[in-house]
Amino acid sequence: MMAAIQSMLTEYAKLLALVLLLFGIFITRWSNNQAPATRLFVRLPTFLLFTYFLFLAHQVPYLAAKMPGDAFERIVSDGFRAVWWFWGAAIGSNAIRNFSYRSTRHPGQKFFMDLCVAGVYLIAFVGMITFVFNFPMQGILMTSGAVAVVLGLALQSSLSDVFYGIVLNLGKPYREGDWISLNNNVEGRVLEMNWRATHIMTIGQDVVIIPNSLVAKSKIINSSFPSRIHGTTIQILLDPLTFPMTARRILAEAIHGCHLVLLTPPPLIVVKAMSQEAVQLDITFFTTEIRQSNEAQNQVYEKIFRKLGASGISFGNRTTAFHAAAVINAQSGYDDVERLIAFTPAFARLPATERSAIAASMVRETFEAKKTVIECGVSSEAMYLVGSGVLSLSREIGGHEVEIARLTSCDHFGAGGLLGGSQTLAKVSTLTPAIVYRLEKQDLLRLLKDRPAFATVLNQDLAARKVMALSAMEAHDDDMSEDHLAAWFSNIFRRPGD
Image 1 (cartoon, rainbow, N blue to C red):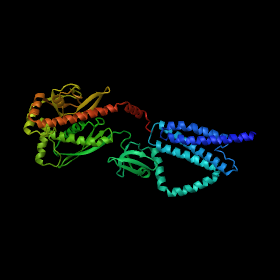
Image 2: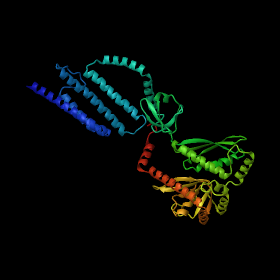
Image 3: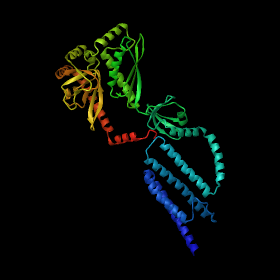
Image 4: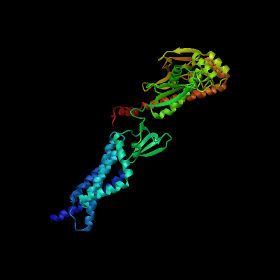
């Protein structure tokens, strides 16, 4: 009687195990699009119940089972135990991915997570072969050794990429998101580093896939570590009779006038060579990150061109007669207002006579460093033209004083309040000692009335400057958001080796 009851319970346990298996398949398909924690939460209880009913049916997966006489019963028994091994492997890999999902992300996380998942499935495969199909372990090891040799010879290149990928993940010469350069003329941002290759997005928005073995053997320049600050070097050739120290001072002002260029570390200006053809200067300036370097370089060249033109200094390879005139102008009229007006885009199209009239109407004002020229939120009563020095446009955003732009020679400000009656969007203050020329309201309005084309050009310039200022303020506002601050604190407390 007891044997019959025991047999009936065993059959019921198998039936319930089958029901749980089908339910587990349904749960697995439903939870595929859920978060790792949700998948683990709904799958684990079902798997534990399935294990419990297997034990009730005397189907212990990790013990060699007695061979039943009935072939169908043997197939069902082996099937249940094989499913248990791979279901357990799936639960284990799900737990690993859940732990990875909750932990701090780092470049090698996905790679080593895949290694761990592969190890779990390998253990499940060996366990199934050993305990379900009753193959001896010694034979498995001998067979796997022979197979490994054959596969190693056939997949030598691919295995090399995998092992070099492990080396790169351990050494961590770069992370996902870093900007790197390789000695095979590949440069760009790292998108992904997987088992076989590293994916790099170039500046042309093309994705280059390089095998890990080639990356490991290359010279790697990481422009994002230990700091994302990036230096860019350009070369300038000036008139051979230009005084080097004068050139360095003028170029320094021009470079500092670019808002994207960092004040710290300061730009480096080095006189590399002097000859009868030109004075060669190498300029190195720094930006917050490498993706800003191209735009900063364009702005620096624009600032240098206008500053040199306003200072009367020409570029190299000009005639000797013009050389002498340029040097005289550079030394005797460094802040000559007529040249400033001629190289200011808003005034450049005016006839020389009108530029001279404007120059005669302008009043020179001198400011020391760290002085306020115009406060934010006031109505300007004049238009100002920067003669020399560097000025900063700043505004209070989120309780912090934030710089949104810089001005240097040939830049102007204050005209918006005269034309549209609007208040200033930012405070204008001096970063260095500066010379500013003031054009009174009545003189500007007279010029606008006499030349409608100039009014159009000035309005377009002011509209473009207003859009840029608003965009800069929005960008800084986004930078002060809660998510940005959280990421900032995370980066501060993250260990260098993570």
